[in-house]
Length: 120
Image 1 (cartoon, rainbow, N blue to C red):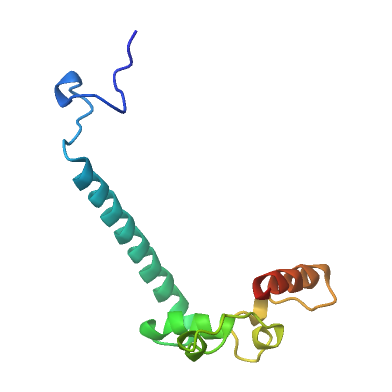
Image 2: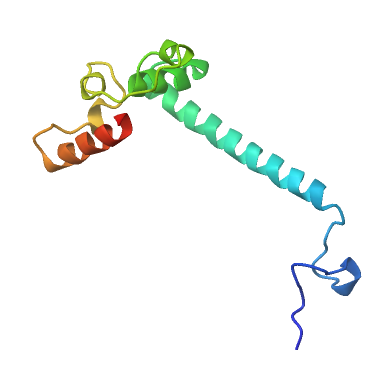
């Protein structure tokens, strides 16, 4: 027989279990807002967990992550492309130092390949 629900053309009175709101535009806006709230809360939690590791206040965590990965933020304002450099990532106080492998290892080779593709 017919399924209890259909994606298009279903009226709320057709099914008492699944209720559809009439305004599709408002439904879309609601979904966008829910997505933004979830991403915002996730980013806040990630920032709070990263604060002790970065040894920075919460508002500085994203900037520190950017600078340790791509270099100074001022380069963005000068419309220079962000680049990934192994020497920066291997720096003494860089947050990525524990996960950067030596160039001689096969993992380091794959990292160098990824850096080259990014910088291309």
